[in-house]
Length: 282
Image 1 (cartoon, rainbow, N blue to C red):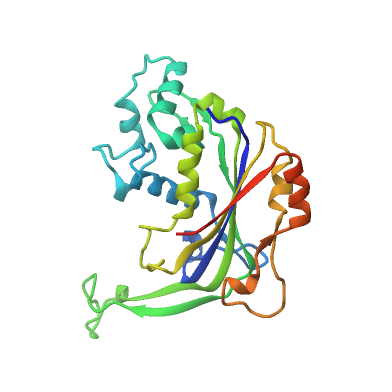
Image 2: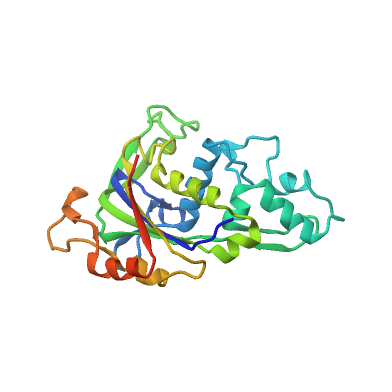
């Protein structure tokens, strides 16, 4: 069982890639109102689930292209193990034992006329770039028609398209593991180690046309372990430890950010029992 609260931060480098497209904005990279790049927590959890599958873990919310059983919906996967007569408590306990992502992130089961909520111990925030990002767009063409041409040119309208990408950016992902919720779902220390292993290699086996191989990588993982379930300091104070070199010059390398932890504050927290492990990305 997990006996200690855990906080973590991950620095991510993006080079000429669409870190997370917004389908309501022409699939342009997500940004906030001030121009900072954003990756939704949903997209990050999807990558974590995919990597856990690569490690052989059983996952309830499987992506369509990664389905490992014959069930094309969550309802079918759920109904394979439970019936309408199965007690809610039994469903919750068995689902936590069966699926890693359920006991990690939680899940709401609304199948077979039931409504069962599982609150998971692992919380993930949106990843946000340290500085505003520059987005470039390219007009692209396909070499053949997808649809029949309706004009004399011989080319259909679907041969033209637009591709958007982030020129360069460093994003920070933040998350926590609540030891009290872990006790309820059965999330163990071994499970926490699996999450840490996944974070180090988050973008492996994740390449696509929007994210070519090598265009996104994990630079560093900062893994903080508290000496108690409650924690030695708040997660907010832990996250405030991360600092970087701020300047008006446009940065194009990870080293230019000079990312580090505030050593004075860290020493105070370590005196209270906090420990930190810094891991290099794969």
